[in-house]
Length: 331
Image (cartoon, rainbow, N blue to C red; front, side, top):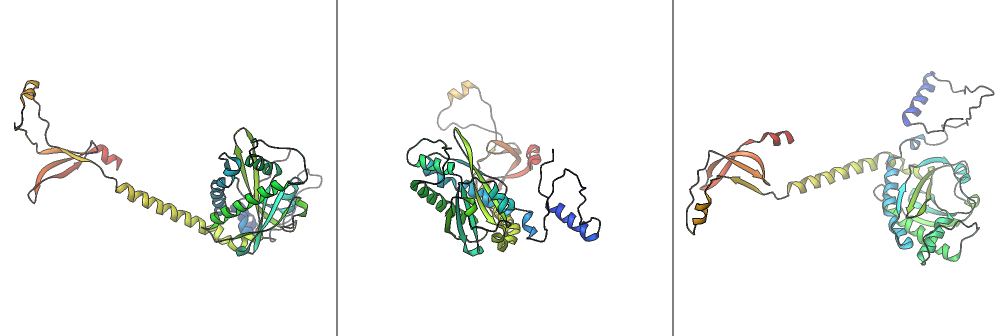
């Protein structure tokens, strides 16, 4: 049994390319005749390999989209769905299409700013569930085999795609401004005039979880050529923006914490008296106390400093002398 395939990391790709340049590795294959090892040829010069490594920015967009798009499905499902994003995958459109059923909702939309398009893929069971729940039906999956959507389902598909487009535009805004415009819709992947079969696409899959129902998924598919104009932003800008945003958030939190009011008290003396004397106290009686040279200084009833009594401009004050050891360790 052959081992499951995996993608090369950026470091592995760089090491492989360096080996080919220096001659340490041969460009020819070393698979012997009769070997049961499966392999396929790949042209490393066919597309921009820089996008095949780090998807950090796109993953952030997808995670934000997964959190926000729940608002699109809440009015349809009448329950709050849990939506999660999978890491983006790169594959040929032919390979991706071969994994789809013959009957799907495939919406082709134009992104003018990127001079490209994207595909929204919804399975029929997903559409049927949203339609049934929207019009008062049970929250259950209809797995019946069919070849076309009803007029009501077509309307629900329009609502879903419109909501997805609005949320995507919002989630991409921190990276670059985009506008998503509907172009066409197909129900058979073979007739989806999206890209050539050999073209690479980036598949962003999302899984929806609902109570007492098997999880369902839907996909957003970008041609690699569509994302090339923003490849440098996908690698760096969103990361720096996130770091900057996190730093701003930390600064605001730090400043807010510094503005929290704290009660401070200074204990001048703790005299002791008998119960009989306490019972004899009346108005205008005077209780003599002895103020020590050092007094305790409390913050929110926690002892923080030892201090001494002083006078500043005719007012009584305390001069902090020594921080307590346990708070020295904390700071």
